[in-house]
Length: 394
Image 1 (cartoon, rainbow, N blue to C red):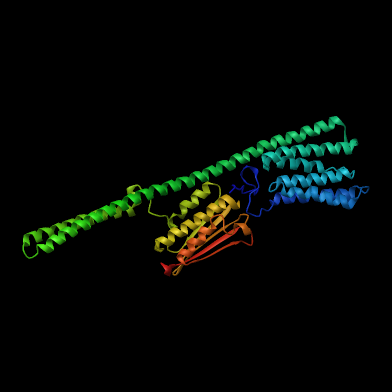
Image 2 (cartoon, rainbow, N blue to C red; image 1 turned 180 degrees about the vertical axis):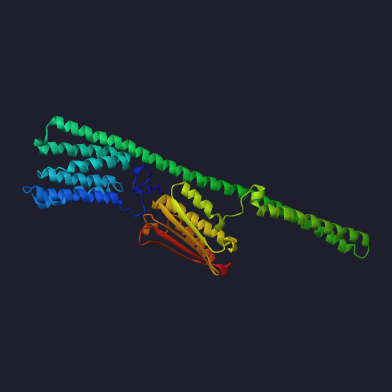
């Protein structure tokens, strides 16, 4: 999946992100509305001699309205803007505003478009500029055209540098997230290796002890009537071996359960580990609000692990795909249920996302515990993942 720019809805490197409905930023909508109004006023009020005013009005709406999508769909927006401009110019209606919209689109395609789209957008914009001076020659001769083309190229180059900074920041942020996830996975693998070693130790210890006690018990049973001393010695050995084994078991179990003292993590994260997960996302640039209500210490370990993994999957999905800048995580521990509510302010889900982005794994975890899960778009924008664990199922 592409990494999504939380502000523009474009994917990392300027490519449009897939799998989410992206709405234009309000600032771009306002800019589009402003130029649309100015162009319409110019046609209907300030230039009564406008050729084909109805056609010109439609073309003007295309010129101004395309600005709303200059960041979420930069290349299609440039094409629509250019088509409207060509229509106005072909009708012989020079405007005092269309050149400014063209400059905005040149800036936008350089900053937010793909590599091929940037160069093609510049070429098409210069071609539209040429058509303007050819169709309406009284607007200036070759020197004016050359000067205007130089301005267009300069704006494009400056915006190209601006876009490179944006992409560099996105790459750095994505790298930080990948590093944090890799570190967490490495830590988990280290613990799994240590736990596997402990399991082998337990297996060897218990297997050896049981076999040893079995041999001495069998010898004691056979010598019970004929050789009481041998029987007593065998029983003493069994007692001694059992005590030594219990001491070794205590040591291994303490090592397993006290990860901090042994230099290991606790065997698995739980609800009490959510602040660390929140801090990782905050460091990656997402504002996460965490609220935990109730006694999390009393939650069974299996539910605590699943709750943590669900929140982790939801936050990872938010960071990579939704473009959200704010997330709220609320955990409520009740007498009979544990509810986990993760809500973000991102782009939302469409029909293709229902089984993707880790959502299938969330459902599978809930099915394992016999719980309920609801994954839906919020009315105000964004996604809500609501899970309810029954405590009586454990």
